[in-house]
Length: 276
Image (cartoon, rainbow, N blue to C red):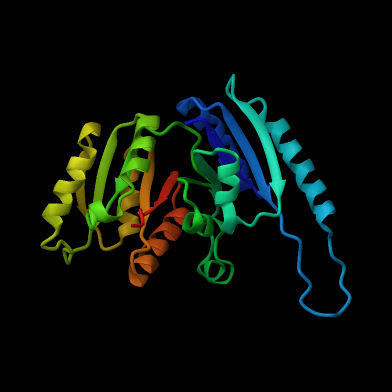
């Protein structure tokens, strides 16, 4: 991997994500880190006179903040890694435009815990980026420990393996990180295995056999809690593929992704399912 695109809103969580990106760049042998801030000019919602900030003012403010951030990060940047910045008004819904322009390999961004009310009212930039990104998104919690991961935990439900798993993107990630791989399935007490489960397990084994993964099945009434408890055993990156296959699965996987992003202290690497 060559380039990390680090999204920032200049918050404490974003600063922690930038620090993690410096460590990750060394681990992956990346050549560049790009700090990116998306600013949006407020749109008046009435005819009443209001004070607004123009585009140029917001851009200059963003540039100053990015330059200040670069200064702080310079001492943490691995030798040989180039640090650049970019700011514009491209919305995060169109993050693919920025990632493609910058030839990014992974998008890195911070997350911070929210109350249930805040989740409902405010939503999440992180979830929106995960929903729209064609690129892997690495979510770094505000209080994530700044130490290299020792394994990748691939949280998989063993459903429609061949139809939904973006195997080419997975292989790029596994080849780049070169970490032990654990494939984790969390099932509740009711046991949601179906007649297709053995076939899906076999298909997954065939897809991943060159990485010699360990396979683990645990029982937990709460999928998020089960993943979190398993991840505590070793410094880990948890890999999750978000499903958009149908409406109900979309809601479920977005909920799992959101809860993991808001409540954990380990990095969460999110990929969208492949689409036919």
